[in-house]
Amino acid sequence: MLDKLFFYLDFPFVRYAIIVGTLISLCSSLLGVTLVLKRYSYIGDGLSHVAFGALAIAAVLKVSNNMLIILPVTIAVAILLLCGSKDSRACVKIRGDAAIAMVSAGALAMGYLLMNIFSSSANVAGDVCTTLFGSMSILTLKPTDVYLCMILSATVLVIFILFYHKIFAITFDENFARATGVNVSAFNLLIAIIIAVIIVLAMNLVGALLVSALIVFPSLSAMRIFKSFFSVTIAAAVISVICSLTGILVAILAGTPVGSTIVAADILVFFISYITSFIRNGRM
Image 1: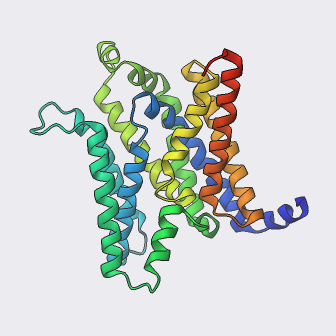
Image 2: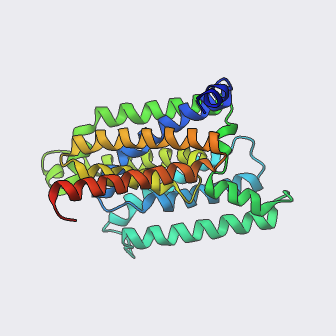
Image 3: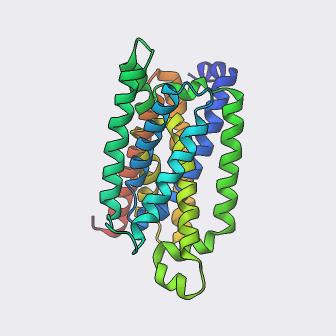
């Protein structure tokens, strides 16, 4: 098995997949803790469906670089979901969970409709399945895709490190953070933009339907064992990277879908952490 693994590692596309998978899983886990604590865990699912709808629009318009449409659209919707629902001046204030549900179902339906009506592909169902579940698209990355992922991931990491204390403050108590002089609206806007970037990147790794797993499972696993925000964030990042690397390598060796294999690894680690917490605390 090791000989087979080293054989595959000689191929550039395998190394690209490992680099991108590591970066995406690291970035998604960092913001995952904040989203879980702010009760916005489901936003990853909603935004990934928006990205799928934007991808369908890019395909219909025959845009060569679909990021030119996917990224701006996803960022705009993320801002509306995280910031717009809190605007007291809105005529009809829609709660966060309701807004996410509306956007999620609507974008998914419209994207699939557009791909069926305007697609020139003979295998629309296969194309949709690949986009939704990731398939093996992570193993078909080009060098330009890797460089783009590295730039965006580095930007996310730098922003998170620089504004860690501000993000910590608004995660637990926005009113207190506002009272201490933190511009809560600006940082909610920043978080929305970062989340949108992470979602768009993660679609290549696990597909549109499984993005939430990268955000939620590592955070929940870390919370079962650690208590402080800093330790949970570090543990979630480590867990996410290990699960992604394991999932990619197993998928390469066993020929299984990359996205599903990564999520299966995340689920396994969650159950291990749950059992560990139960044994340590003597309760569920």
